[in-house]
Image (cartoon, rainbow, N blue to C red; front, top):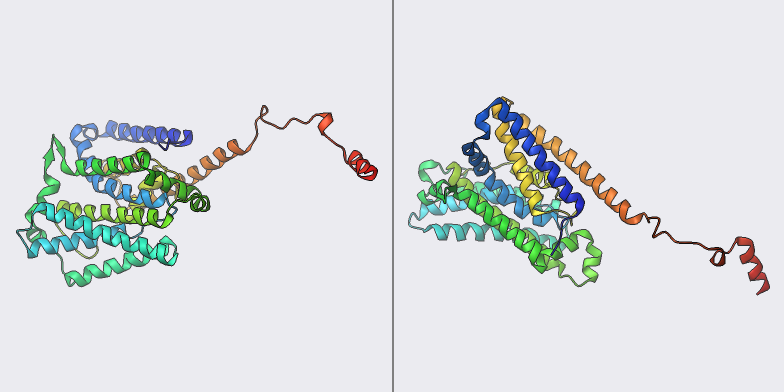
Length: 350
């Protein structure tokens, strides 16, 4: 089982304290912000982001990045909306399977291109991001699928509750639990950490790298497909630019939560805290009357700060490992230390 480093644990506690401080500060100005109802609203608004972050985290652990998640979400959501409109009798289970299947197929395309042609993930997913957006236009003819055309089961799913909690939260919890199980208790998950930490050593250790990369991108696509169905149901609309730019928010949540873009570092709990941080910020901005146009600027600033903190933390951890302590420093005694003169004399005598 992979255990988080002391630096990761310390970072998560600091992030949790920052989230609590922001919530308390905003709550002091607007007490409604600290109510249970508002907490559920923030959780409901952040649930789809949490699902996407779990998939993105798997990719980031391998030193890759999936820039196509938002386009995958939009294309899958559009196709599900079109299927629901064309066949009103399709069951909910069928729609869920369809969404996960389409998403997984789109993610597998990314993985196959990266593995087969040894291409950088940022180049491949940047290309498929545009391809998937174009496919939305082709599939829909450029038209929107509006609220009255969305299948009732698609619209109804995100509005359901279970045990007093929104269904979206249960979907997010299931994605988090699955990712935690994969990374902490499955060999495949531990091998993602190993490959991201040292790709060359992972190859020599016999880790099936192509299979693990395919797994990471396919799962990222599957979760993006599921998120697409839930997004269309929650907002009751599907169009070409759906969730445009949302991939940056997904990456931001990962990085804020301590998932390293250099691979091999990150915890599920940290990623969840990154999602919660963005959810609290987005919920707090309207309360303190900050323009929503500042949200991207704030997210970008936080990403930069998080990257710097990650880099400094890992450098300090590396120095602690490499620098010998006094008790482990090599001990030189006169009997085992030869001066240059003595060495030269011995060589001459020989």
